[in-house]
Length: 232
Image (cartoon, rainbow, N blue to C red; front, top):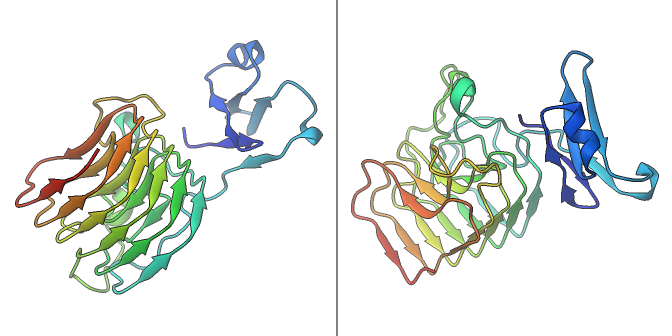
């Protein structure tokens, strides 16, 4: 499920049944038949700031393949993209809170990306998924991003992800990925602080990956000539 509700900045736990909702405050449940979302916060909602994620992504171009984009000093919070696993395998695999969307030569610096339902930052080719088959790319050149001094934390599946060559020539420097994989799917698919596929000629330097409920840095299949140095 991709629904997210925050009360005073705290993410409610998504449970499966009404009985679980009633048992403890700080929970939510969806009623698909009635088209309702129910929350249990313990006292009057008027005394709290109640927020619901309404968009799957916070920052992503309308078209794929854009180059020479600079993103600096932003805070992005609460994208509710679906997780691509199991019965939901047709969903776009790396629909992150922020995505370069198969672009090239992006500079992403000094930003905070938090509390996405799936991934935080996609610097690759968006993964897989039926919805990508009909979307054109304005430039076939991908990769060569510089990603510095960002914090990517508290995401349901992974912090920073890359797939299908979009992360080639990548520089990841002085970033933090912490407290990711909140959905608890350890060892499953994309679960990591940093998860890259087919990465080539990349440098991950002075990266701090801590408190994740999964791997810290995971370089998956077909990765070549990468260097990971001075990381914690």
